[in-house]
Length: 621
View 1 (cartoon, rainbow, N blue to C red):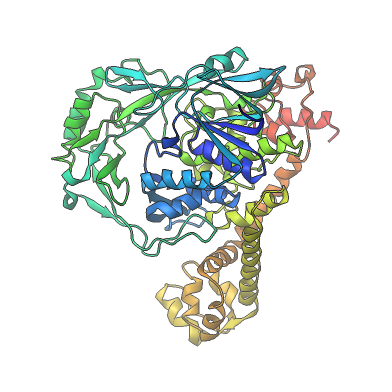
View 2 (view 1 turned 90 degrees about the vertical axis):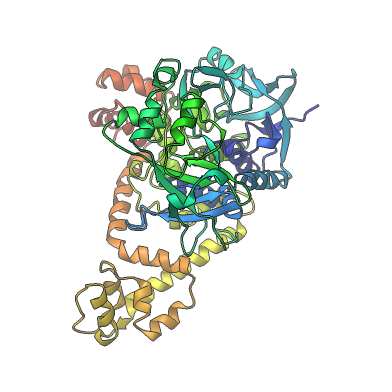
C-alpha cells in the first residue's frame, strides 16, 4: 500500500511540521503521520510566536529554510520587538498570531510541497530490525516503510489531562493520547520520564471590561520574522494587561486541597519559568499580585487567552477567582485551564544530530526531548529533518555550534546536560549572544545550509550577499568620511554628549552612547543622501556592527579558542573506563554520552578541566 519513504515524521505539531519541511527541502520524500489532519500546527497554548531568545530561534529557523517565520508573518495580528531598551544582543521579536489562520497557513504550505505526503492515523509502534528503524506501525495494523523516522509526539505520549480532582487520558483538550510507543521504546532500552505543562482558561472577550485594563499596543513600525518577501503588518489588534489581587489569591487557595499539583496526583515536573497561577501563589507568597496578559486569539474571534493564569484547579475555583480580577468581573469562560502530564525521553540518549544512540536512523524532536515552547520544538524538528535526509545520503551531519546559533546552544545543552524540567531557551544560556543576534540569523546560517545542498535557496543567498555587501559599504563610508562640529554639535548636545571641537570621522562619533545613524543623517545632507540607497535592515546591522565592534571581536576570539577544542575529535569506540586518571563520574558520563569532540566533552556535567587535560594528553595534545 505504501512505498518506502526516505523520512517518516510522526506528529504534526511545530516540531513535526518543521521536520517535514527540513527533510523535504533536502530533497527527501516525506510521510507526515498525524492523528488529526485538522490540528496540523495547532497553537495548543498561547497564540504567539517568539519572545526573549525564542524570537531569535524563529529567525534562525527561517534562515535555515523553515516555515515558522513566514507563517507567522502571514498570520500575525500584533508585532513587538522586546528589550529595545537593552543592547541589541537582547532584542527579541514577538508576534501575536491568529490561531486559526496560523494552522491553516501551515497546512497550505505543507500541502503545496510535492515531496510531503500525509497519513491520518495514530502511530502505535516502530519497525526495528537489527537495531535499525525501518518504518512505523499504525493503529489499523498497517506498516509504513521508511529509511528514517522522526518522532515528534509532543504531549501525546500517555498524556493525562488534570482539572481539579478529575483526570482523563488525552494529548490535548478534545484529543486522545498516544499509546504504545513509550512501552516499545522502553523495551528497546530508552530511559523515559514524566513532565507536566499547563494552559489557562479561554474566555469570552465580549464579557470583559476593556476600559479597566492597561492597553498594550504593537510597535508603531512593526517588523517581521522572515527574511523573505512576506507582508508587513498594516493594522494591529491590541493586547491588554491586568493583575491578580489578594482576593483572587485567597479564592484560588480555597481549591488547593483539590489541586492535583498539591495532593500528589501529578508526578511530572512543570516548567520553572512558566508556572501555574497556583504555583506562583505558593512559591511567591510575599507577592500581592501577578501580571496577566489578555491576548486575542485572532482577528475575527472573541476568544481570549489569559496569559499568566495557567491552572489545574477545579473549574469552579478557576471561574470564581477569575471574576475577581479587574476587568473580568462579568467574564464568561469558554473552557477551563488544565494541566497535562506526558512521557519524555532524556535527550542525553541522542547524538548532536538528534538521532538516538540506541536505534540507528531514529530521531527525536520537540517535547519528547523534554523541551517546552513552539520555537524550541520547531528548531529541533528542522535539525532532525535535515540530518535524517543527510543520513540517507551518507553525508556528513549538519551540526550547529554554540557560537553559530541559539539552536546550537539548545541542542548542545540537551544532549550534554539532559533536563529534569521542561527546557526553555533564554538569552542567558548563550555565551556568545552578541554574535547570535536576531538581525543577522540569515547571514550566519543561510550560507551553511546552502553548502550542504538545501534546495530553493538561490534567492535567499542573493539577499544575504547583497546585505553583506551593503553593510560593508556603510561601514567603509563611516570610516572614511568626516563631519564638521557645526553640523553635529546641536544633535550631540540634545543627547547630552560632549560637543566636537574639530572635524572628525563619522565612525568614532557613532560609537558614542545614544548616538545613532538616524540622528547623524539628520545632521549632514551628504550622509543622508548616501544612506538613502540602503534599507533600514542593512542600516541597523551596520550600526550594531560599528557600535559593538570591540565586543564582537572579543567574542570572536573566545569562539576561536573554543573551536580549537571542537576540532579535536574523539572516537565513539573509546572505552573511558580504562582511563584511570579520569574521575569516576567523568568515566561514567563519557562512556554514556560518547562526545564527538573535546569541546563537547568539556561541557558535560561532571567532566572537570583536569579530566579534559587527561583526554588531551591521551590524544597527544
